Length: 220
Length: 318
Image (tube, rainbow over all chains, first blue to last red; front, side, top):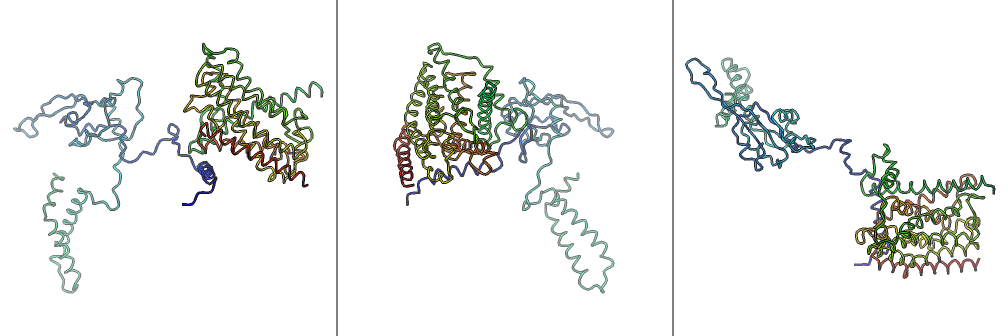
């Protein structure tokens, strides 16, 4: 290795600082400009009350025990005459103490009824720690700040719900086509009609696999 | 020279002394920030933090003025003034524009300027000794060692210019200055500027204040206005050093249309050099104490002597 010429290091140092000066600074001007948060940012937890069944899974799984839930049971009269009375859980209190919360998101993961959501809002600092316990009205306010889920990757697999819905739709159109063309099968149009039903049939055959039951469940 | 004229000149010096160091300080805030990818002060004064140093001054003025119990009271309190005032006196002798564009032309200008600048460093020495604090003492002694080491190459390189011009007067030097003095006195200019940086204890020669090893050197025990005066002395020192370098080595007011806008040239050259001072601070790490000494004695002094020899040879041959 040859010895570097004296002064190249010094010149390089000066060049680096001068180049940095001509570039835009990386400072985030936060209070003046809002930060651009990445998708799925964990700011605060919103509660969609209507979906909550008071199953208490979130409160039990919470590592910090920062979720408080009170509820009572109400009896609902039978839907049809002569039927049996049903009992239903009614939410009295749902509170999250964000002074304890460690933003692990387990409550949101564990909720079987999609009642809890991440919101990217983060400006809820308080001067009194008690104010950090957000009651259900405040949690509902956060709900309106929950963004739409980010779009999937270009190459991502189609969501199951969409795939199932598409299959059903394809099957129905294929059936309708088959019914419409079945009686009026004319020999004049040699190839194309014979192809179309076969396509429809193959699609219908495909949709006879177990996945077919999925949309039915969704509809029910 | 009547009383009015004298008053006007003194007012001009005072104004320059109050404004230019603050300008350099604010420039340092902003330039250093942008060189580090930051934006620096943004709020004070509204527009890009232009009033940051004013705000700092207000803050310093509000602080309690503390003198440590064990300190040598009088010396401790006097030190900031000793550090600051010499730089103001130097400004008096620096020519800004041709034909009497100097507050007071002194025949032995170089002597006066260099001697008085040396006095300024004594302020840190006094503060370091009087603080009754071991870190202050360390800083003070480092200051003294640095002053000893760098005063010599500074004087030698200034002497080279005086030899070339055949006069010790600063306006006189500028009177006979020619453009080819730039390459001729280049080594001297580098030596003078570097030695001046070291005397001001600016990074990379800030071992005497090295905040990560000896707290803040001689200024450790200072607070409030006295501390602010020390800081102001540092920036006044930058102004004086840059102005002096531009007068001695860069031709001061010389430039196109020097007759009418000579003072602009002086200010411009001073400003560019002050930017260089800031730039060096951002770019280079601090020299260790032994490196500081070695640079002075094994590099700068020989270079200054070489410059004097070169000046002498050219002077005799021509």
